[in-house]
Length: 268
Ligand SMILES: C[S@@+](CC[C@H](N)C(=O)[O-])C[C@H]1O[C@@H](n2cnc3c(N)ncnc32)[C@H](O)[C@@H]1O
Image 1 (tube, protein in one colour):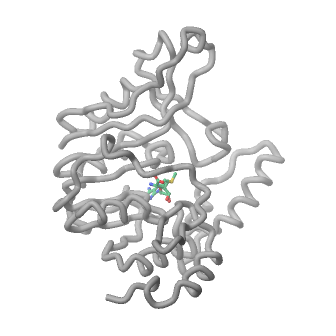
Image 2 (spheres, rainbow, N blue to C red; image 1 turned 90 degrees about the horizontal axis):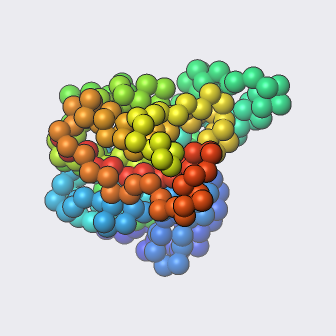
């Protein structure tokens, strides 16, 4: 099959330049999309085997991890997203800046009303990368909290990367992830390390935009409640792949929680 890349590299480069990218995706021939996200591929040690497996990437955005799953030999890959694809981010960011200035919290419901754009402007990156890579990754537009296994299927591997902290009901969210998982879910999230109190099962709540300046970030757990929540959501077993950072003794005593990225595998 001709990919866009094989057809015309210059056209591809100019189309890449028109898009606001979240992910840096290598499209080949020296073209890498200029993503603003610091998110990188998870390492092989942080990912389960994906060859021959069905994979669902929840909150796929530009599709970095969905394309990676395909490149690793997954038999079927579905990239699902909603907000990043349909919300007019430029208008929403202006609204958030106004809220910050006034010292009020934004009304999150406006994402699905005032700022929603049915033409899905935020999906342009995924669509272009898919075309350029000659990929067969399927896309599904929807809030995963409202998507049933009957509608979309269930999956050997579910990637749930950078999504948990956006959800207002984190335990219900993990139950939805469980319902879609037949093998293993990879849960990657912002987490907090509390030094000597780290074994306390705490879920830190951010009412405003304290976590990364983003009003849509609500919760960051310590490691132990995430294990417990995954079990309460119906997973049979969990394994922490990336846990709290190794800190110097002085930092371990630090008064403020240390924020880090935690990776957990939760088995169906
Ligand atoms: C921080 S980004 C992470 C993107 C990607 N998974 C990564 O790790 O780089 C969060 C993504 O989750 C998506 N998201 C948040 N809540 C969602 C929901 N309820 N249903 C589907 N996608 C959701 C957002 O639209 C966004 O693309």
